Length: 351
Image 1 (cartoon, rainbow, N blue to C red):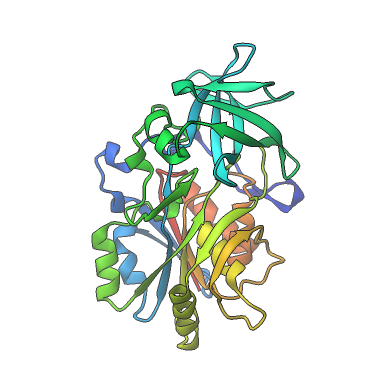
Image 2 (spheres, rainbow, N blue to C red):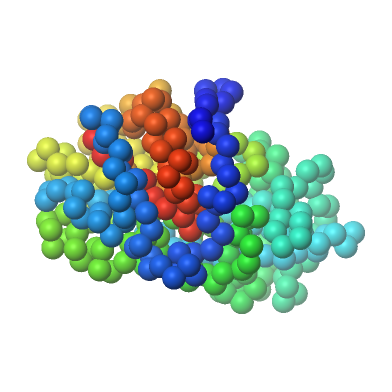
């Protein structure tokens, strides 16, 4: 089995369908924290196969683990176009009280596929007498639109009744929103789960703190992914508190490691860095895309899931550990049967 580098300097490899996690680990008789974890050491290029339950044994007193406490919303909704075409719309990013960035998708059996051709015209009819109007393309991206929603109530309240979690073709049935929620979520807003944090339990966090590892929160509300379109992330909402920024800087002053839980945390923390290379409080939007050309300034390591072929997230991992070690890590994960996607296994990258 080989892993090759795809076009445009992206990583490309064949992901066997058998390694796509189609259900939560709990449905396979496992606890959240029973998923497997491959540990990659940048300095030594050493790879260690382990379990997420052993996370504490790989961290040191004084390390700082930064988590994204954004909660997942039931962002997939049914719609009908003026011509009677049935579709599913994924709400992605809230712009203001009534406008969202959305992705219209065609129904394809039990799942959906990317919409091609002209967008649905006129108003879309939603459940409960609500409507949606596509206004204009978002940031010049053909699949994303700015849409005005007329729901008769706040969006999140309406979604609790009429929405469901976003689901892609590798997941063969609908799972409840709780399956897509991290245990430490505090503020709803993510279209898709910041899934690197899914294996965490209250016991995991207790063990970390008891062993002298600090845990700090931030928020980045994730938008929709595009498994079909190989796109870089677009603008997303970020909040880094005064306390979290100070703890990042304190850890670095003490020569301790800052470990980001997920690509969202890397993006948020690196966005917050000022000209003095210190993390700053930040409340705004980020369009930062971390690639090998971007020098990571405050993140030393990360916990992440296993990313799809040619995903832009792989560029961030390459920025952290380099191309060769990333290839070695993914080759090991494929050979050893690690599972992909939000219900899959995880990858811990350490300096």
